[in-house]
Length: 166
Image (cartoon, rainbow, N blue to C red):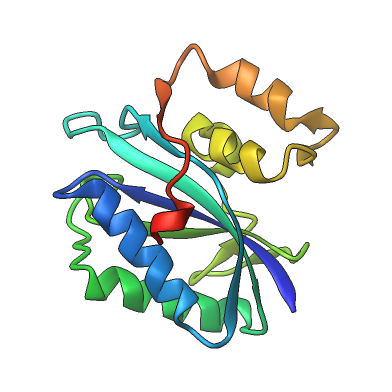
């Protein structure tokens, strides 16, 4: 089974409920095993700034789904939770991104792994560090990458223990 890191985000409606529901739906898939879950962080929006703050988390799963099959699952969950894609980087009920997939490198019009912007986003890196502090990019530790970004992007702890509720 492949180890896969996913990023979750929500900034519309009951944000925490959408994160929990996304995790529940992922866990209900017989081809997915939830291995670890970060705390939830509240973050300022990046890219399109005229919107509410996000709640973000990262999860580690194991799956025997291919990257494309997993993308179909995550996209279906987003649709079930009423995700609308109207503004690039705009408001959303739920966003589920595949960050890393078992060391795969993939780039086509449908999917890019590793996620193309993950190393530039502290709202991805901080939750990711919580579940795997040994990650690095080009010899830079995840802590070093976070330090380069932390002053530019607002991130603060929202809820540490929410996995019992999922």
